[in-house]
Image (cartoon, rainbow, N blue to C red):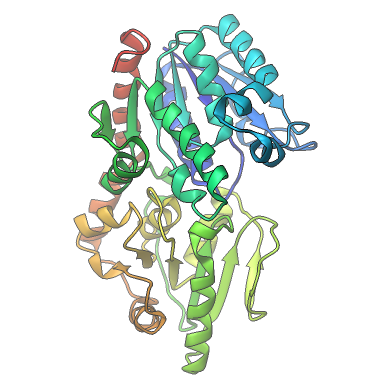
Length: 383
């Protein structure tokens, strides 16, 4: 089977890690890939993440669209057709790539404008689309002006309607899309948690030091709610609870960041593993997240986590008996209480093994492959 897939290379992004885990698994199963990467950067280094794949079965295409400023286009557009028209040239290039490579199916991760452009080209070429949800765009852009929100909602809705099948990482995500995007029930879908790489599920001895360490990891954006992590750090300081706090994120100007929090750059998977193992607790305060790869990677290593009840991975934690690692982040004091309770706490082997079974890359990837294969056998546009 020849699979087209959109690529990203953000080391702190969930789409990158989930896609790479899947590709690493399917790569061993005689599948071919057409990697489609659109970038708004004028400069970037070579794709180190994908160098290990043979070009004979991993055909990587990079389209640079830095000259097309999305914000300017969105601010001047009256409707989504005008936005689409502004990106007509990259759509044409993507169509040509698809015409020449003829994939059996397109696996599309995320709902932002780059996968949206690819979905337009794929539909025009009659290629079935499996939409692998990662982030609900209408929620990610809820803080923007009304006209911008309207355009992003239309963008997301059009992608959902183009999909032959959809994979949701959680029931929370599916319900949000039904209620806030499509305004209707979705039948052509499956709920499959995001896979966790074997590097995070291999047996590892955890030796917590007496020092109390808490950390957050992820891209700095409004929906990730990292300001709440900063508030928790301050509250623990007021309590004289001696601890260290770290924040792993990409190079972004961060507002109201306490100087006592160490900011670290994105890491490789091996570097991230070692970082998790040096912490007593990983905190994820998102106001909404379709899944949450970071806490699942950490907890599979035996590191306790504390996640928002509005994250899809909370469903997995509850399923294996770790509901004490799920909380509402409305009350900083209550969250701080739970942080002090969980930091450095060990996870029972029974719970850890159950987590690893549910999130095993091979197990999850087989479920995703079954959906992709089924979509490839159906005529494009059938739902």
